[in-house]
Amino acid sequence: MVQVAGWIDIALTSGPSMETIGTLGPAGTSSEQAALYLWADRGRGGPPGVGLYDTYEEAGRALREGAVSHVVIANAYASVNSFYMDPSLRFAGAFLFDTPDYGIAVSPGHRIPAVARIATHPAPVPLVEELLPREYSVAEICYATSTSAAARQAGRRETDLALTTRTAAKAHALEFISRTRPIRMLWSVFTLAGTDS
Image 1: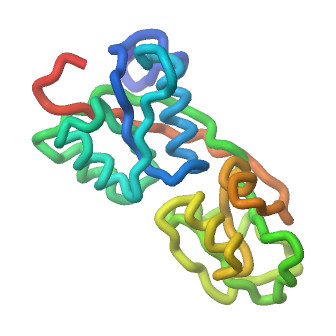
Image 2: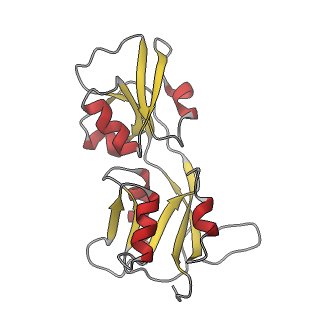
């Protein structure tokens, strides 16, 4: 990536091509959308070479084992430092990408109690207070491994609501009860140390 001190190239104008990209799944996560965005710019053609994993750590393991050539990690992820500090990995670049809209979603027909259980990935928890309609309050935050997993919990009615993305809500047949908004996020790309890409 072309970088000026303190700035990141947001246009993805330069950088290596990528054979495969691993990131956090399942389908519908912001991470998947960011990886697809990166693939559209840097992929080697053909259908998207994006592998989805249950955790970022599993995506990192896939990189170390050669199953993917790069991993994409949201810098909002609390343990992103472990990727920066791992001597077997090399920081390859970063890019800005707006997530799909985040909002509070419910399974159609589910009667929402005034004090509700909400599934969410830990990173966007501050959005719960901002987006939760005033007629509801939080009984419990139930942590999920991704925004898509949070949507799945609400879709199965394991929780009353989910803080999730538009993509994940659609994948799990949820409807939003709140306003929505995207989040401009920084995404880091890693490859194996000692590789040229």
